[in-house]
Image (tube, rainbow, N blue to C red; front, side):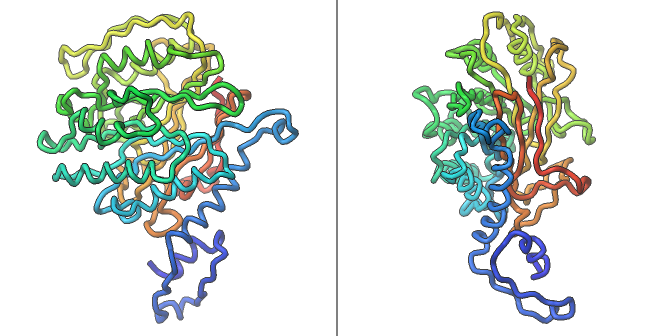
Length: 420
């Protein structure tokens, strides 16, 4: 990497001293040794991200003392710890470390952190793959003192073939059995967590497990999303009902976008796989919850197998409100409406899904890569920061690190949408 390229990335946001040079001089100058480059990069990104977060932390009435601070959270996805990632190498995952460090700054008063899957790269050595996952768990929880929620991704059971795959029990042991944010029951790889909201009530994070195979081998987990009947029953009868109050606001975490497959083209963010029981199933359950209606339906197995999902929930007496879905997978930031569900309520705004940029630029993705990334620079890391306003019924979105799409130079560093 040239001195000029590095300076172009940092000069606007660092107070550190750099040697400047002309085009002619650059060819003959020796490499500039930067003391603690990762720290310099963090400070540069942190300064910008803190200012962005502060710009969305309060509404106008808050500044006058009329309301409380919004619920603030950090969203990371697709960390892909591996032996080949430069800035998320499993032995020293700088980008992951920086995301946890940012979220835990006391002055920012961030209320929660979520990680929406693909924590590790794959390996044909199962022990090595387990080391990748153990590293993610170690560094995600190390120095992390705020409520944090995980959901699985399509890489997270190492499905390359039957010899290397993690079973559901092995994944539970690696990822969830020692999770300090889990309650007494840690037997499943899906769960919910209630986090106090400074505006009153709670944000309920519902974490779905998209690779809920009993042995891990029933389906190609790298390309097929699978929920068990047990998990879907839990979603409708427990996660959306148990101890729910009118002061609860619900966020659903699912790695894969709720969209149809794009069949190799850039027509949706779910660009390389399929839902075993159709992608509309979870959004249709959520729509019944939002509409306070029953839902009774059988979802066939799209692969022609006998394994069907029976849904029979009554939300007429339900309480609480739905905010949005959060995920990753496409390795790009996106915020889109969920369309073409059979029970869509025209009196409600459409459900929204937010995707987060990948944390490891080594993993370039399949279809969408609109945000230029470069290892060992301020563009290496990327994650999203949200402020949820449960009084305005709006979500405000900003970013840490790289966020500007190459095809949209006027893209705003702050986004927002209404959810009710």
